[in-house]
Image 1 (cartoon, helix red, strand yellow):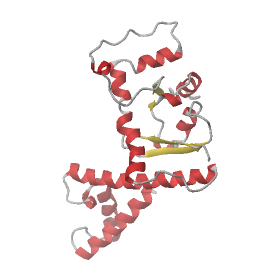
Image 2 (tube, rainbow, N blue to C red; image 1 turned 135 degrees about the horizontal axis):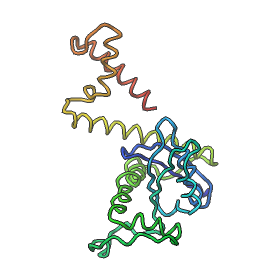
Image 3 (cartoon, rainbow, N blue to C red; image 1 turned 45 degrees about the horizontal axis):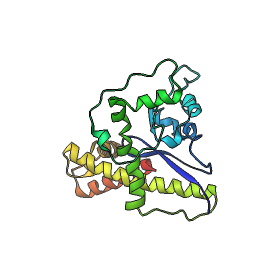
Image 4 (cartoon, helix red, strand yellow; image 1 turned 180 degrees about the vertical axis):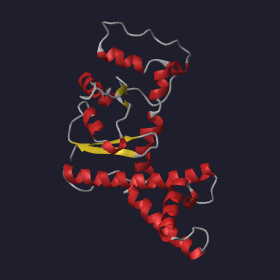
Amino acid sequence: SQPFTIAGRTFESRLIVGQSVTAAPNDKEQLVPTLTSIPAELGKPERILTDSGFYSEAAVAAAEAPAEDGRPGVEIIAAVKKKGHHRSVEDLEQKADPPPPGPDATAKERMAYRTATKAGKEIYKQRQQTVEPVFGIIKAAMGFRQFLPRGIEKTGLEWGLVSLAYNMRRLVSLERMAALLQGVENIYEIDTMRTIIDRAAELTGRRYGADPDDDVRFRVVADHTRTALML
């Protein structure tokens, strides 16, 4: 058996923006590599939510350290201990926020405070809506549960393809949601697709909606362009 650990980084859109495979026995040293796996074109995230497996004092300090140009580091919101997924009676009780940690508090105690307040709990709860559903969809809806190639390099390649397939699926779903929210009849009328179609109409000197045959051609161009951008 090959004890590899896979990881994926997501935004609020539930798109995977970074993925990796490691042979490390745990994730304690994977927080910084996680950040660096996010393409620079997407910008640097302001905040990272992660589970207890990624938490270590050294990793958080490195991630939150200011950049060389003076820009602030990434705020880390991490659990410091494992907790069940189901809420307990204690979780439902209305409680006042605990007092802030004192000046002599350890780094772990300061981190625990971030997720102990009402505001911190609401922020950390977003992991249930961003990261967790992604792996659930890959396993349950896409049926991917086992790597076939051997070796970390080939496994990483397969995980990259799985992430790409998931993102394609997710982007199509987002297009359908956009059509509903924008009140249009099909995905070719949403703002992103119309931008492509209108540009194609400008370049060809033809008008979208004037000729059914031309409309098919415009939609093919839009389909190919958006697919290339997805890749």
